[in-house]
Length: 409
Ligand SMILES: C[S@@+](CC[C@H](N)C(=O)[O-])C[C@H]1O[C@@H](n2cnc3c(N)ncnc32)[C@H](O)[C@@H]1O
Image (cartoon, rainbow, N blue to C red; front, side, top):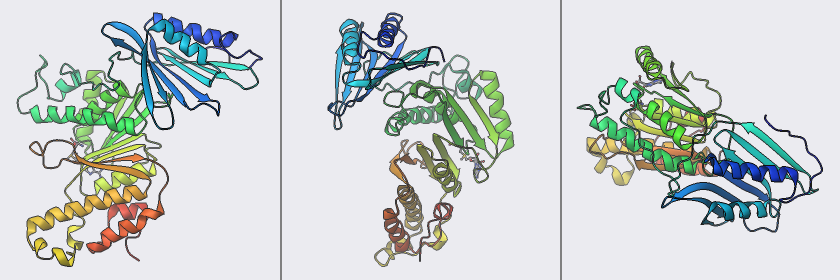
């Protein structure tokens, strides 16, 4: 805590002492190019604008403040030169916005204006990356080929070229980083739009194998989530864990550790983002259940080897002929498994998005189920889960077991 936190009688508006200090800090941050964002919120009941989000941008070499005004249904954007931008923010302090949060690269300054005219100013140290001044709101940050961990994992050469035979892996890493961005936004975890938090973002990759995507996600999250990131890779093969931890040390990556263990036995505490890519068979279900159990905001799984349901699958009458072909039965079994997983996550309170996350020419195991936490479990969605299971005679499934959802009865 840097500044005082004591409420005191204060006049609201730009003339108030604490309000003036907040505005001075804003001006200094703009001059020093250390402004990250401003959020004005808590308007009075009469305001249709609920929130203003402001960030520095550079447009054709000129500094601007990009002001996004959010109502209940839409957002409008204005790009103002710094001086009128500061004036506009100052005029709206207390009228209508009673809360103003200024984040710079080294601290956050929260101004609270109370209805009785008193004000509170609270400062906290933080370390936020220098903002990207690109005009486009969300810019995909590509992983640079010069990264030491890419070289140590054998993806790139010391000169920064992609190693022969690793081109597909490199493309997979980039594609993965690209798809993270909209998902973080949808889950409210992107630096912009998320409530600023002094807590680290907790990311866990289970069944992480050699850790390529753990490193990539860790790095991408640091660029995009705008807060400290603490990442863990969990893998049952101890030899792999030793190797990747050696890479972490040698590459000097901070905030990332790998641990030997099984998904089933994990008790990791709260998690913000959980991922399991190509974890074998029901390990995917264990990962989804872990995400639900830990209240993760975003759970991403790319399933592989769907063995569990095939012995149970009974073809619906209309599909009996079609499913006498082994390949159709196999594909149908994969479909039913993943469709059930998505339906179970929906009933567990998650919005699910299912898509191919990398072109099928690179790998056939390219389906991703991304789950964004929206609330509590919804028993209203149980009939749809049971109808799907019932259609194919499925009576037992690992995720359903773990979530305590009976498929029949
Ligand atoms: C096919 S690899 C995928 C590695 C990595 N996620 C990727 O996509 O590059 C699957 C990894 O999951 C690990 N694994 C499978 N089941 C697991 C479990 N129940 N607990 C921990 N690790 C598991 C395996 O040892 C293996 O290294």
